Image (cartoon, rainbow, N blue to C red; front, side):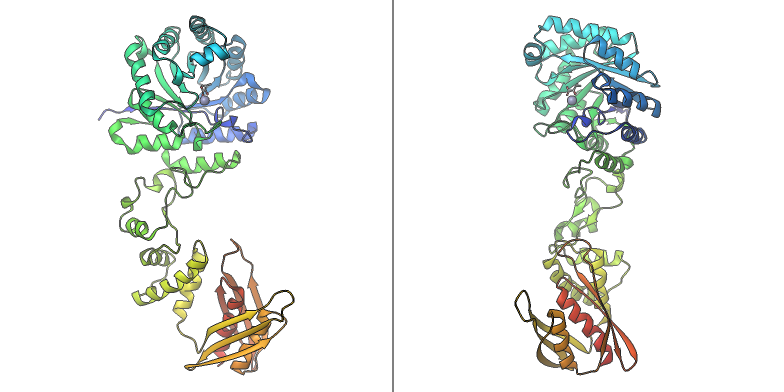
Length: 498
Ligand code: KIV
Ligand code: ZN
């Protein structure tokens, strides 16, 4: 099957970088540009050289740093802009000047104070002037989304005749519907006589959340370049996101197009851009969000474990994510629990898994997410089996102006015994009550409460060391309630003495 190539024009470093607070220095921009080169983008829009010395310098340095992609500099349809861009691109192996002007009624009348005829003249002049410096000239018809198709066709035909190699049809305000944007591209394909001498490009903004849909509609109707940013970053609601478009074109084979993007590098590039630009990726962002391949409900987890395709249309490995994550929460089922326990290297029979599941649910009810550390502790308890002493109830009173008091109920040899005690804190009071029940002479040698590392709902871990008749005994426990964890760890050690 013959497939057409769709060129990927990345504007993360130009349109993407216009986001307030996301500005990069030249070194960071070079780092991103190199990453984009290894990702396989065809064009890197490196900046708007006349806008600032920093932007000029970045275009110079990126031109030196990358060799495969075309390096592009943005200009207005102004001679000075074009001269400065040409100068900034002088070291590029494959330079492109991206020049253009507004073509919508709004832009012509309220921004440029001009007429349709004069805009066509300025567009032609800008392309011809840029052609004096570089062979590859892209023209943008700003606000093409809101430009009437007949006039747009006239502009496009004129700039192609003037030498434009690519014509960009931006939906600058993110206003169009997918069917309108697709129809626009189709109209240009059918009504511009010389359209085959240039590539039509999409450049869609996301103001109504339709940037990706509009871009795909453009491709379906004949656009062969897509202008995108990593993670969809960009001014206001952002630009079209590279990862979404690339993965749509890759997964929907009937579209008969391809890109040269090495999709396995998508996740890494996404995180690099997010870190350098200090712009977190929203958790539910398609393809690269933290939750894009995470399953938390029991039904979905069971389905994914039976066959990934039941609930996933893309293999996470295809975009460089190791595997789908099964997030263990109170809504997870036994299948997900068994899967994770086996991944951790434990083999438990059905009865043990059933029992573990009960304990898991208790923890999951107290915590948002049960992690691997929590599971190892639960499995450890499960493997250990029953002890000679078990804690059946614990109640403590403590706080400012209260006398710390504990009531403990232990089960020993089938008998339940209750004792109360006071102490200098809830743990001291509980330990005294336990000692009264067990009635053994033991000395507490080591008592370690491990710091909470993740969130305030995490399991607290307690390690204990006691001495009895010259021998040392160790106890361990973990619980979201730190007093319970301490008492259980103490009992764990005492159970070896009794
Ligand atoms: O959105 C837009 O119209 C642009 C042009 C300058 C290409 O970014
Ligand atoms: Zn834009």
